[in-house]
Each structure stands twice: as C-alpha cells, then as structure tokens.
Amino acid sequence: MHDESRYVRLARIMHMVLERARVPLYFSRYSKHTYTVWQHVTLLAIRQYECKSYRRFNEWINEATSLAKFLKLSKIPHFTALNKFALRISSRLLEWILARFIALASVRKLFIGIDASGFKPGHASQYFFERMRGGVKKHVRGYVKLSIGVELREQLICSLKIRRSPRHDNIDFRNVISKSATIKQLSIVVADKGYDSEDNHEFVRERMNALSIIPTKFQHVPVERMHGRYRKMMKQCFHKELYNQRNKNETVLSVIKRMFGEYITSRRVVAQNRELVFRCIAYNMNRCERIIFVIIRGFLHSRSL
Image (cartoon, helix red, strand yellow):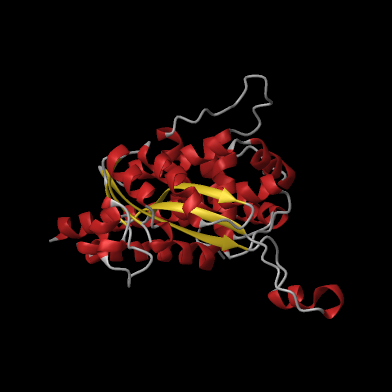
C-alpha cells in the first residue's frame, strides 16, 4: 500500500507552486467546471511520479482516498480526461509552472548548470532495433533530447528545451540560459566542453552579467594559438571547484531516469513533449518536498535542544 501522507504533501507543494504561478482554476468560464486546472496538473505530475499509464493511474486514484480528499475531487476523472488535458495545456504555461519552484527554495541568484540527455521514444529494446528488418543489425539513433538548466545549489530544474532530432547540445545553450535568466538574476553558469564557444561566453558575461565557466575543448592547444578573449581566460585561470558543481547536472538527469525511466510511453509528438515536461515538474515537486522536510526537521530539532 502506498504512503498517502506523502502524496498529500506532494500535492500541497504543487498547489503552492500553482498559487505562486497565478494559474487560474479554469481556463474558460464556459467550461463544465467539473475539474479545476490545479487538480489536473497535480494529478498529471503525480502520474509521472508513479510511472503509471493513464488507465492504471485511474485505478490508483480510487485507492488514494487521502489524495482525492485533499484535491476535493467530486468524482474520479476518467483516464481520457487527463490525457486530453495534457494535450490541451500549453507548453509555455508548463515551463512557467516549472520555473516557479525556485520561489519555494528562496534562491536569490541562480547558479546554473546546463546539460542534455536523450530519452527513448518507446519500450523497444536495443536488441529489437538490431534484429529488425530481416535480421540486419542496424543501430537506430532515435531518441528525444532534453536540455535542462539546473539550479545547482538546490538541484532544481529551472528551464528546459526538447528536440526531436539529434543536434549538437550547443544549439540550445542560449535558449535554456535565457529562460533561466527570466526567473532570477544569474550569478554563475557552468557547462561542459561541448558548449565551448566564445559566443557563449560573451552571451553570459556581457548580456547576462554573470560568470561563465566552460572548459576549452582542446586542452593541448597553447593559449597563444587560441581564439577569443574569454576562452583564453578559461585556459589561463580555470576555477575547477566551481566547475565541479556541474556534476550535479548529471545527478539530476540520473535521478529522473532512475525514478521515472529513460523511455517515453506516449506516441504522439505533442504527448511526448508534455510527458517530459511533467516528468521534470514531478522531479521538482519531489525535490522541493525533500528540501522543505529537511528544513522542518532541522527547525524541530533546534526547538528540542
């Protein structure tokens, strides 16, 4: 049996974020008003947390009586209602909700790390791909690339970018950093050598007024043969301790794949994109629940001394 109190805490955190994001209860006054937007978003985030299909999640809600009572559900929504809402809600609103988790952590300036990873669009194994089409071994490079900007001190996802086709990670650098800069003032931006570019340094340092730490791609090239003022600075005085914080990007991506899986169950392109965004929201929801729980436990421990 699942721990219902934990899901109530997760739903309460989700409601706190939706309140800070100023998400309306209904998108239209002409809707049936059977379910609110808050109820739908919370249920879809918990669905990703539980890693269940729409049909199985509908059966799961019937057993989660405490969660249904907290959400004030007059009746359990049909699985098609959740599916249609996930397709109907805009990705811009979901990214806005994702960014509002930073407000719960009380972060003043952002220490951003950027990284990307791929997710498999289906349950088929690599063996199936290799043996398909008459037994001819063929590596099929099919995956959905997710680039995320993470606040490294609290390990919360601030922004994301989803791509359907394999592209270089550097193409999404400005997009992810720009979205993060709309949340809070940037202080430091770290990335691996795949993002090594003088344009990226200039964008962060001159336009975002932040410190960029990106190692040079070719370590054996001497400084006098390198191009770019900031790339030469990275070669001469590289802050390794701050750069090592970038490993938390790998931690966040690893946690997402271990908790929710490295595959995407949806088939349509729009549904796959929504699934990845709700997966990131579910991760932030779980992370904020742990942060708040640690703060409350420390407060109670100090009161008992």
